[in-house]
Image: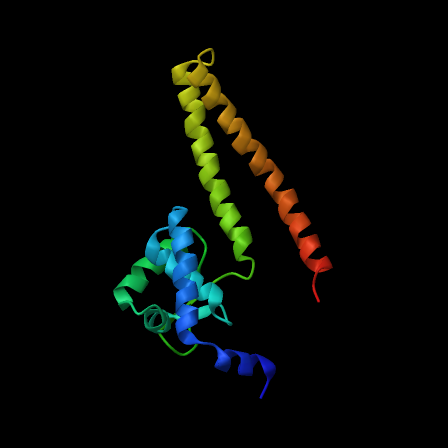
Length: 165
């Protein structure tokens, strides 16, 4: 029996569910809705990073309707894709291989929307006021982070390649 298959069979399913719940709680504490967070972590913890709605419902011990709503959110923000199994009408939900790139890109898009609104706020409050100055600096920060992100992601790829076994 291959080593990977032995490792999968040796897993404690209750411990896996506990891990999913614990990490999903951290994500929820950071602002991700609870059910999408649980689905996201379940896909992250799946060896194939692909699960059907039935598999997700069984693993998370929730209704298919709860899975449907959670997956809809993850698809909308670009963290999960929906695919149809060949020869079937069943959907399979898949996490991209570079999921953390996608997480950062989602956050980047959110920060850029915040920056646009804060620029408007700085104008409304007046650049010469303390509140206006604070709001004017915030979009500069988000613009800086957004411009640096592609180079950071490139450095990550270099780092990952250098540290592969």
